[in-house]
Image 1: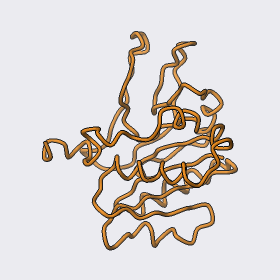
Image 2: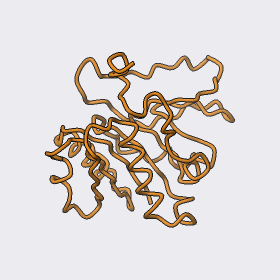
Image 3: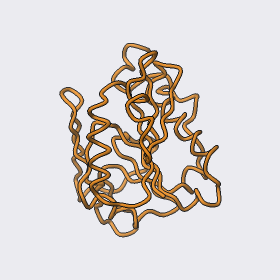
Length: 195
């Protein structure tokens, strides 16, 4: 099973576009976990509550990205048996991306120690793999992921999550997002306002 955690705030049309791009890949066994952070209105929650391949959750509202993802991961930990979840795939995706038809080809390369960012250079083979995501949001939030393919591989302790892919075993081994993380109650673009 592939679980896609979608932390969302408004922008129902972006969520729908992203989900349709995944559905067009014809990859079986995909389940969307929408975690709606839009206090009181919860437009994504009510838009997708009756869809067969979707579980929808509400936050307390205005809890920001990290806590919203945390809630989605906790939901998976509590609802999927650990022995099954170990081999499942978890993707954390923003709703402002769309995927290509060959998006899930990279999932065969996942192992119990890997997290794939939109563009990742593999340590063992030096191969560059891409999730194939295309960002569809507006400025100033359009991001690029340039990579100098000749640069040495560096250890990374924090990744942006437009489209992070990992096996369930990685989450089981490392646990959920640390609540002591500075970004836990904020959003990357909001840090300067909250520090």
